[in-house]
Length: 166
Image (cartoon, rainbow, N blue to C red):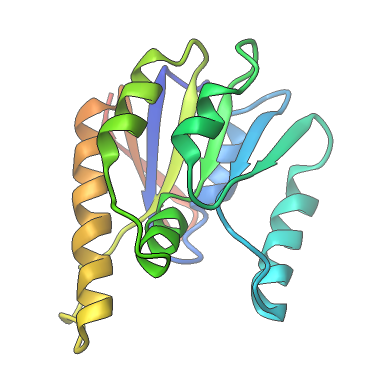
């Protein structure tokens, strides 16, 4: 299965969504990473992703302005954005407005396929604090907006993929 113009991969933490997304790229591409190695554990996660990808990938690290980063990508390579959940978290932490329109427009106009990895949130108990509720609300809305625009939406659970939209 190859990436369509816009593919959204959803799943919980450690569901296998990033590995599934990477498997769509037979010869690499551009990996737009939103995570930052802010502590030892996050640095280890980033290293594990890098090691799994191997050769053939160009890595661009952009924790905040992914629309601008995407607009400057090579036009001949597919792009993997990992992850929307980390990006939303970054935006909330930096108190930046979460405006999805520039991103949606850039995604729509991008000449190469784009795959976005995002977390599923809101399947459990409503968080007890306002920050966590804001994150769940923001990411849930972002997932809905991008799912509506995507050509394909895939849910990954326990390493198993299920196509929700094609």
